[in-house]
Image (cartoon, rainbow, N blue to C red; front, side, top):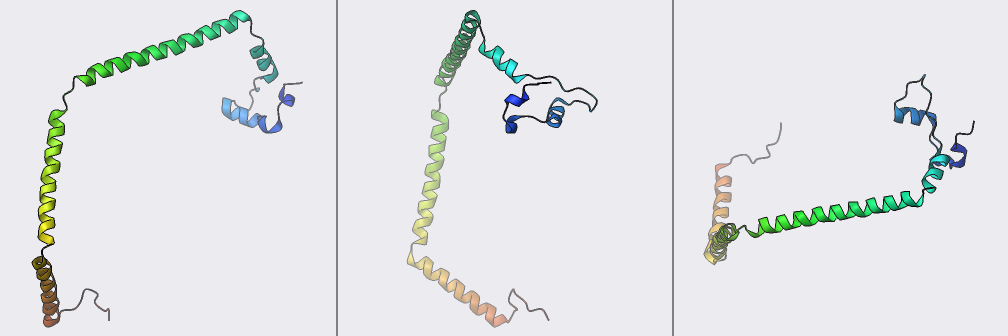
Length: 143
């Protein structure tokens, strides 16, 4: 029995178990007969009318999809064109300006020499206090 599988390359051929798994066949069911050569021959031998019908259907599908896309674009343009974004954009710009003012103020304070000297003095006083009280450091030795 020639099932057309001898015309295929062996890596492309499907095993019976793979077909049974794909088709969810029971163990006692017969595997359906697939003839790839007959399917290919049927696909190659189409009449002029069938080919013309397929071409017209393809052009109609392309035309319908382009028409739908154009309609969506027109509706989106008309809808989004009426939106006034000056309120949200103005709010965002005012927030950016407020944050920038605070950043500039902090930058000016931290670049003054007195702040650096005060921070250094605070660290030195903290070290002296910790050494004077004699407390254990954070990494206590286990005994």
